[in-house]
Amino acid sequence: RRMSAEEATEAGAPAPASEEKVETKKEDVPLEFKFIMRVQCEVSLCGNIIGKGGDKIKGMTEESGAVISLSDYIKGVAFRVATIRGTKDAVVKAVNLVATALNEPKMSADNKVPVAEPLAQVTVVLVVPKAHVGGIIGVKGAKIKESRADFPDCKILISD
Image (cartoon, rainbow, N blue to C red):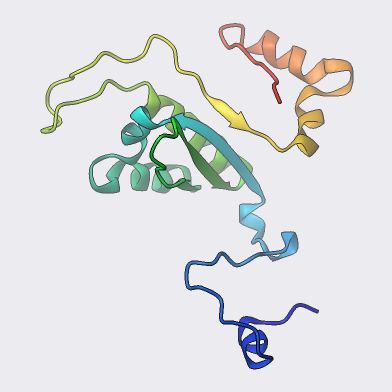
């Protein structure tokens, strides 16, 4: 049995820091959040996901029904990770919305004039635990071959 923070403090352990993350067991995660997808995003494009005052990310969350969050910005790191949680359908819709947002033209501060053209190509990097990669590849590569055939314009790579 795991001690609660209060029990640990009473037993003489130091109190946990307020920003310390609480570890949850797999079975503690609500059923509607059983699907989690992580997408690596270039820092320079994260504004397209967040939007002014967070309006864009809130709108995508409402439209998809999935919870979308971005990792904190770390100086010197070129990427942030968008974590998308929800039902399978909500996560799929949210990934589509995020990919679309990444390809939107950058707008001026008043949001009226594009200051940069949309990208000719958007690279979406899905972060997949090694334990699940086999489910994407399939037996003898069948699933990955099928995905490549279904989406010939997409380049699907598996890397370490």
